[in-house]
Length: 488
Ligand SMILES: [Zn+2]
Image 1 (tube, rainbow, N blue to C red):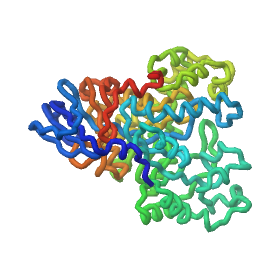
Image 2: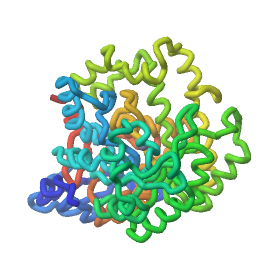
Image 3: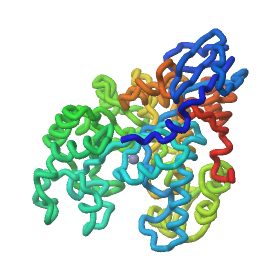
Image 4: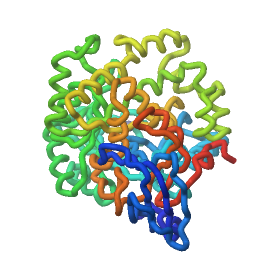
C-alpha cells in the first residue's frame, strides 16, 4: 500500500535547515546550532558543523527556533465527519462532509501531527485522507469485533454484519448472538479475520472489550479463548494487538490475553467508581500493565469532548475557525447540529452542573478525573507515556482533528505529566509502540523528514506546540497558516 503521494512531490529538492536548536527525544539536552540536511524526504545529515548547501537546496534559517520530530497521534478516526449525522440525505450536509474530509488532514498538520494511526474500520476513508494533497502519514488497525458486539451494537441490526465484514463469531455467545444468516463460519474465525486484516495492509488488529456504556452491561464480549486465538494469529502475521477497553474488568481480560496496547485509560473503576485517591486494586492493575510492558493510551479527551458541547463558549474559540471549514462551523451553531447533545443529555440538561461535575470525582461525566489519577500513578511507576486522542470519540463537534491532540496533551499536563514525558509520548514512544521507530520519532539520519520548526521550546511550555513556524512534511516546508481552514 503506497499512501505517500507527497514523497514524489518532495523528492528532488534538498532542504537545509541551519543554526537550529535540535530537540530529539533520545538526547538528554537540546542541541544548539545544529544543521540538518534533508534529501528525498529523509534526513540525510545532522551536524554541529555547517553543511555546505547543495546547489539546488532551499535554505531555512533556524536561528532562535526549535526543530522537533512531528507528532504522532496514535488513536484517531478519520472516517467520521465530526459532528455530522451518520445518514446524510441532505445534499448540503453531504457537501459539508466533503469539505470536512478535504480539510481534516490539514487540521492535523496545523497542530503539528504528521503521523496518525486510524483505529476505525473504513479503509476507503483512510484512502480519501491520503489522497489529499497535504496529509500526515496514515496507518491503520483493522477492527475485529464479535458478532453484535461493540461498535456493531450502534449499527442497525439489518446491515451491521454486511457493513462491517471483519467480525469474529464468538462460540461462547452462540445462543444469543449466532452467526448471521448467510455468513460462512470459516470466514469469521479469529484466524480467518486476522489473515484478512493482515492482507489489507493494516499494522494492527483492534478488538473491543466493551460490555456497555453508562448503565448497559449486556453487550456481547470476546471470550478469553477467542482472544488467545487472535493473539496467536496476530503474532503469526506480524501485527500488533490493540484493545478498546476502559473498564477495570475489561482491561483485565485484555491483560490476561497478553495484548500489546490498551487504546484507552482505565477510567471505569467498576465497583470502585466513587473512590478517592488511588485504591489498591487500581494500583495493582496499573503495576501489572507496567510489568507486562503493555502500551497504555490515556485518551483523556473522550468524555470532555462530549461535555464540551454544553460549553456556551466552545464555538467562539478562535482555534475552531482554524480547523473547521467555515460552512460546517456555521452549521454547528444551528439547532439541527445539536442532535448528539440532545441524544446524550436530553432536552433539559443543567449545563453548568454537568460542567462542574466534570471537575469532581463523582458523577457520570467525571471519568476523566479518574483517568488522570490513573495516568499520573502509571507515570510514577515508570510506564512510558503514549499520545492518543481518540478524535472523534463520538459524533461530538467537541473533538476536532489536530486541536484535540493538543487538548489531550493539555490534560496530560493537568494530570501531572512533565513536558519532557509528553514530548517523548508524541514522538519516540509512539513510534516504538507502533513498530515505526525506523522511520519516525527522532531527528536522526535516515528517518523520514516529518519535522516541526517551532518558535518556542515545548520542553519549557506546552503551548510551544501551537507556535509552529513550519511543518516539514517529507522534506517539504509548509507555512502553518496556509494549512488553516480559514486560509482561503
Ligand atoms: Zn477510538
